[in-house]
Image 1 (tube, rainbow, N blue to C red):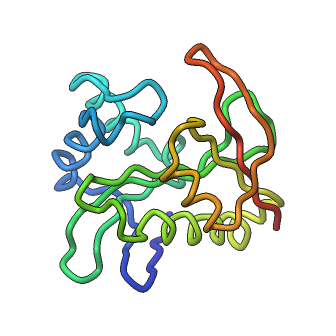
Image 2: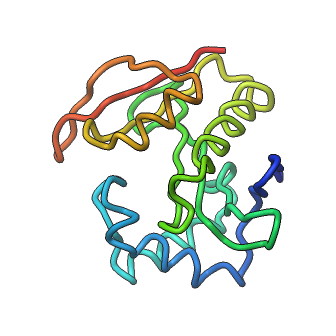
Length: 164
């Protein structure tokens, strides 16, 4: 897995010392409000933590740290979309203390670049709840454009895309 550095961030493989930070992130109701089905239970978070260390599952999964002080601020991923052959999706979740500082845009841009340069993808996708204005702004600032609506058991959501 590639370690990625930006001006302010380090995206790297999770290590065992990151477990409690990760569990705290994905079980936080506020942080996870617009992520899939919301905050995970502690047991589901533990199972996801185990999967993150499975190299077949977690090829492009990164813990996100501030370069300045090595503080864990979040999680990011680039993965194939379930049921959408050929579509790869970016995702990111940040601790509340990291909101509004431009970190999500920095993460999105560098993961998109990784998808194009390293994985040779022709397009990169993102899905977002229609009412999640912060993430929609991040996607737009990252160069992504609204593509279409899709539906799941939770309702309608937006799909964004950027082409190489």
